[in-house]
Image (cartoon, rainbow, N blue to C red; front, side, top):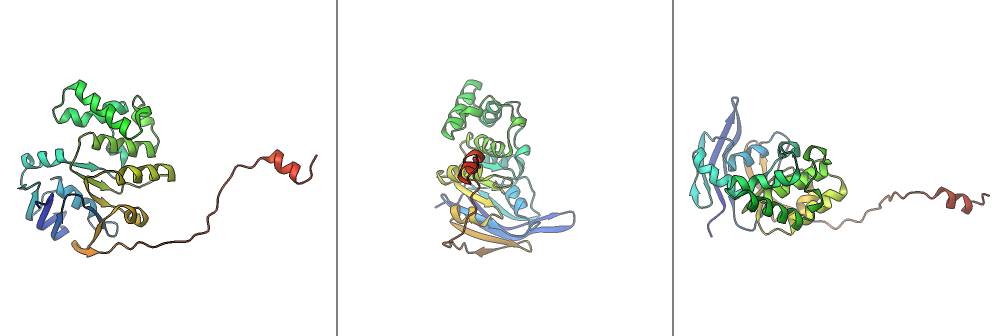
Length: 245
């Protein structure tokens, strides 16, 4: 099977510091690879390198069966690998949701009507159609994250590169994000500090430490917790129950 990505000895330097040191990595179709490591370990740099946004000083990058070296090579890679940025505000730049989700398909060469139709279908499939006419900068943080993902999925990528996708999500939007991602058949590279999120989605893991990648293990545990539930109080009912007038 031809891997989707195959990195061999890739080294990336920035401002005199070695960020990635002879990194080798293979991603096959259907895999959901978790990339873990401390803040500043180079996880985002690794994602950026996969799509040509960082230039290695050494090593070889093969993506979708072809070696990738220059910008022209990586344009095709970026059309086939969808990158969900760590900050949703970096992802959204069109005035309305429907325009933003249609932007990627337009960039792929679809006619405007076809791009809008694909955007509408994508939002409908993700149960986000009610947001289509909303102004992007007025969305909540969770809505921005889901709309950003919709924009990526509208390009019909073969791989998703997810950079801290659970950052600042409330429980409702986190559950929806997990539901969407779990239902997709595309391969994923997931950078996250959220262990429970990774346990629910990833099929294998690697640890980035000191610029090097090493195999890691995902542990799934059954937990029993006491939960504090918060309920609105019916003060009138409570007053009656306590014997009040």
